[in-house]
Amino acid sequence: MSCCDTLGRNRSVCSVLSTLALCVFVLVGGTIGRAASAGDNDPAQLTSAIRTPKPPATPRINGPLVFGVRPGYPFLYRIPATGDRPMEFSVGSLPTGLQVDANTGQITGSLKEPGEYLVTLRAKNALGAGEKKFKIVVGETIALTPPMGWNSWNAYHGTVTGENVIRAARAMASSGLIDHGWAYINLDDAWQKERGGSFNAIGPNEKFPDFRKMCDEIHGLGLKVGIYSTPWTTSYARYIGGSSDDPNGAWSKGGGRRNMLAVYRYVECSSTAEQQANKATPGVSENAPPLVEAIGVSTDKRPYALVDGTLVYEGSIMNGFKIVRIHADKVEFEKDGQITIQTLN
Image (tube, rainbow, N blue to C red; front, side, top):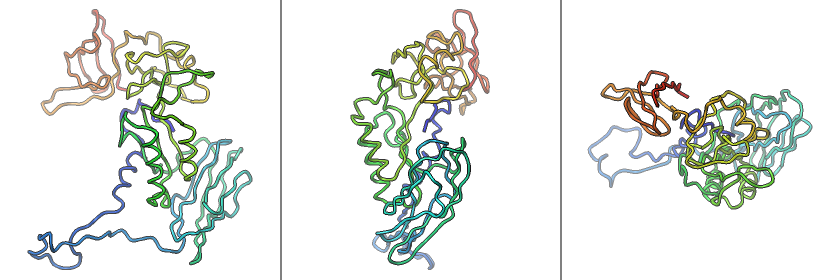
């Protein structure tokens, strides 16, 4: 999963849902069903209780009604089911190429051809059984329902470590959220180190000593792993980005977060630094104006802009560029008598 910085810091729906996860079990004070009295404000008289009903002991299959996957890509879906364990899982009409683990309910494999498959998810334990109709869609449109999970930026920003990610995954499994359809552990910005190795690829930095082991453990829990990437030359947290002004991928931390100012499909498996550099709009260089990330109006009616992470007003100077005028959707910069207009990204 990629989270492009051209969207600013408005993270994916899974980031919002990860915050809502903390609110599933709420402690409610007081007593419901009678008139309030003066004693209700006395802490000694107050009681607390978890009002969220417990799931039944019999199997109940939760989660979405549909799941999307691209043709030929790995399929990973864990049947989210509540109820007493041990529980046995099965899937009716499961297409060739997929298999289900009867003990964990994890469906794995791969489907090569585009199409739709209607299956029946089933779970049973000593107390009963449950089932649910489920559609598998194989095609290029994969986010068919809002992703539910955890995103590292909300909690750790640029300080995230591999241990933080593992602990979040374990908590999602042990808390039971996984049995209600929570599925994604998304590693946001700040994992990257400069390119290197036989593939000249961006690799994990010292905060992530064993990337494969981390991902294998998360997958073993039945969860999916998402990872941040960006077509910028430098990420939001000031780490190396997917593009470079140098065809060999050379990068300098002080280079700024410049957008490539080109529209293209960002594909990790084929977009090398050289390919990205070739798609850059001519003239985008160290002398290009700062990136405009947001525009607004202050309480005293002054227009402002968020430029390279800094709040500026008309007359401000950024990297040698003077902010001449801030419009509703663009900013005019002036340098050496030349006017340059940057539209809101």
